[in-house]
Image 1 (cartoon, helix red, strand yellow):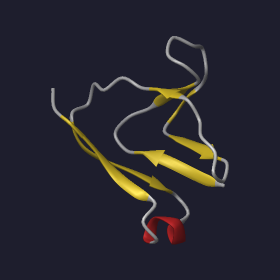
Image 2 (cartoon, rainbow, N blue to C red):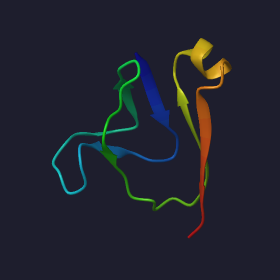
Image 3 (tube, one colour):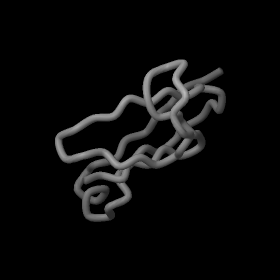
Length: 68
């Protein structure tokens, strides 16, 4: 499993407009996916990564960049 963490934001679990809980980390099953909805209201360069250090070191990280 992969505890995926998004810096600088929280997101809601489930599809847009739903009532799921707000989080900044979600457990994603191996080879799986989750639906999240987040407001892009904090422009900048934000890391998205697996909290398992050996996964992050192996490349399971990226950066989310956007401007206002």
